[in-house]
Length: 411
Image (cartoon, rainbow, N blue to C red; front, side, top):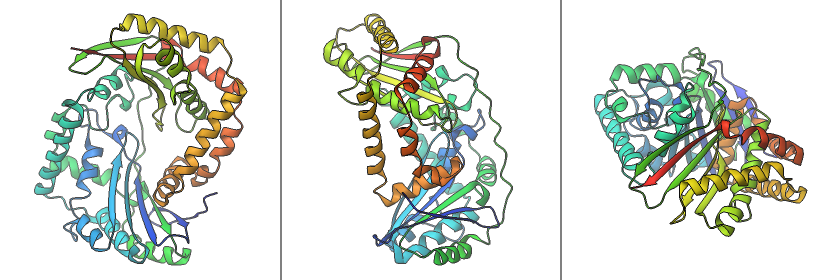
């Protein structure tokens, strides 16, 4: 069990405090409820651009990293289609430094032409290096709009294309900040060896005076139920032909999310999984294959991806792939296999929670889902899952009409 205290400031900032008396370090995690799904379709990549801009300095603090490093700390951030998360790790006695830095950039980020140009160029270079100039780099730029026709998950976190970032204006940036970067749209988690009163006093001191702004309602286009198989082939300079089967799956709060998690492990997590044994080990049609879920807040994707062996055609592989899936759907998962997968999942999650940072991030995320205590309820949810539940879900999820297939052909 991960213990925590929860309180909220009058300006709407939700705060989670997790006490760990065994560590001399502290974590300050700030999760903003904004991701790529909140962008205008004609101005994508802004959530990720803002992740960079938040390190460009505030009105009072020219360089975020320098001040944190002086206090013996380090920091980083990440953006997804759903959230933007910032974290600081530093000696517990310097907690005030992290709170000062995070509160100041929430209150008064510096909007300078220099900062915008510097970070714009960084993001553009990242777009080129990670998505355009490396093998398989543009897969998500191609797969998302194939799988999603309406929902904003149809573009990647980096954005639909470079031009959206190139054309970003100061007015665009200020508008995005005003809409999403406010206390009522954030969850602050503090983890370390402190007393709750001390934490409350410090949080009130640093964040209490930031004015409240009403959280904007999130109104997103709903993705229609997919009723036809979709496929697309692209040719690229890659070392091997690759495949990406994307099946629609339920949103994060749906109980079936956990069934998808287990099913993905049964099919393709390790060398003991079905797809590895049948398609790689026995038939040698692929050099690698795996199955995983994206963990999206809204209805997302269940993926089976891999690379073909030399001499294997897409036609031969696809025919065999669907045959193996059919065999699986018409067969029976053994109770022992399910127990083994559940134990591995629980072990993996327990291992992740050993780190103070992971606990802070997960508490923030579960609070965004509705209740931070959800982090303590997952094991019980997995324990209640039976073979019949997984089999029933597999038959719904792994239908060909529920699938979008991207094929990357070697040039």
